[in-house]
Length: 328
Image (cartoon, rainbow, N blue to C red):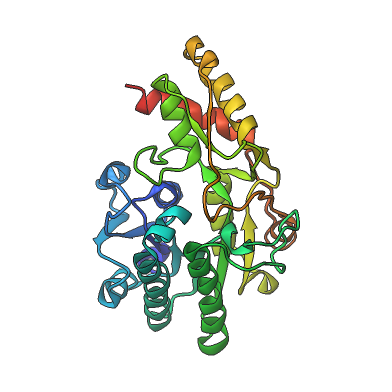
């Protein structure tokens, strides 16, 4: 531990959607928090509330530079590694950069964490690792072949984490995030996630575009459940619970058609005209998995995970946040 027995955490990608929510939560719990970010996809405004906090430190750097990683991990007890280039379409358009960040950058963080004697390395894995496996629900030990460069990079992360545990004794836990959503999620850009993108389109009285017929389904997972899983993974003392991977999800699935219906219902409470906005349907997107549903039995059994927010509860909270913060 650091001075005065305050635990020090490094959150990579801390200016991003999930990372900034983790920064906020752990600062509120009295931890020292170091954020490493190059602001390629994260935003400085996500951190603005923390700059006056004596327990917060920003290291502006890139995980592709080992020296930046080594500076960031100095004196750190735990690493919560969130930094990555997300998005399946982005990885299809630019596989080299995705690989550089998600594989080479990940390896740099493992090396830096090993050399700094970090106690545990908790990292963002991905449900995309299940690939072409058609079995539902998704169980951690049964995966298919990856369907995109992004999925390959996230599977390689798991392989590297396992090797670093076996070879160097670094404790690792991977969290296979399903479709995370909530406050601070960026609605802008070519690779914006579906929920904030649709919310912004509805608020602007524009029709959202669904890829395919709308019957693809996802295990949409509210940000507070993800924060809960990171905390459980970081603090568990159960030897059986470490050096493995967990689905990080709610454990239920929603079709895109139902998502649109639920969004319209939630937003109509603020603007009745949204209820009448039609949906446009386009072609299926390359690399997309048709259905995604997590088994969270392993996380319940080994980590004591019980998600606090259902999809609908999270959706209502997210819509309220977007309306109050992003409505123009």
